[in-house]
Length: 209
Ligand code: PRP
Ligand code: URA
Image (cartoon, rainbow, N blue to C red; front, side, top):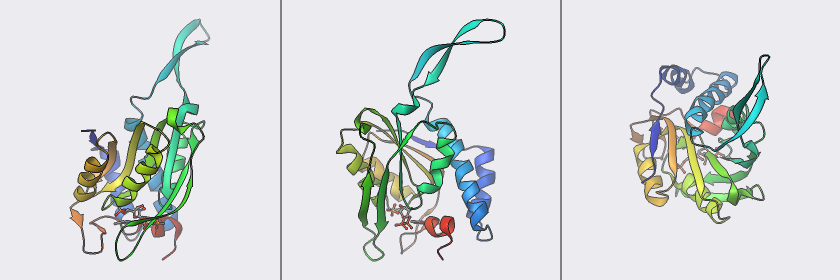
């Protein structure tokens, strides 16, 4: 079974308070989403490969390390996953970015695919799937299924708010994929929304409601 990492950190808890609040405006919501993504990325990238290199300090030449960021793929699930991309790119500007477009059918809660564009050699990359909301788990499970069809094997998932139901579903569907999340909430309501959650992440990021 892959790991579940919950970022139980004071900075994360503090920022989540403002992210959840219905009084937080679009601009602040975007900033908080980006900052929380950076904090999650710190942990989720702990095991990515580094290469030995050298650099010259003002005093001497020394052996150092660099990440091979061109072998990192970020795959946001549209729309809301886009809100996490810049946070990770600020650490790894050379990472490739693929996109998978999915929306949840309002009645069935099943994911409907409308877009997919992935980096050419994603099979050889460390892949970070991004979506701030893990509710039923249907969307991310579908996205990972699409990514695995390319042959990609090292896949991690980053979410900001997760439900216990979504975590269980994802662990069952893709037991090899580690999950990194800021918080595990109480559960889902009858419409598949996370409680207490933060509402509709896409609408809050883009001001569409
Ligand atoms: C939201 C969210 C996830 C999905 C989570 O997207 O961003 O992709 O729901 O729900 P699930 O775990 O039950 O599949 P939504 O369908 O609202 O699309 P949007 O991002 O375009 O608004
Ligand atoms: N998608 C969201 O944006 N929020 C939820 O609570 C569930 C799914």
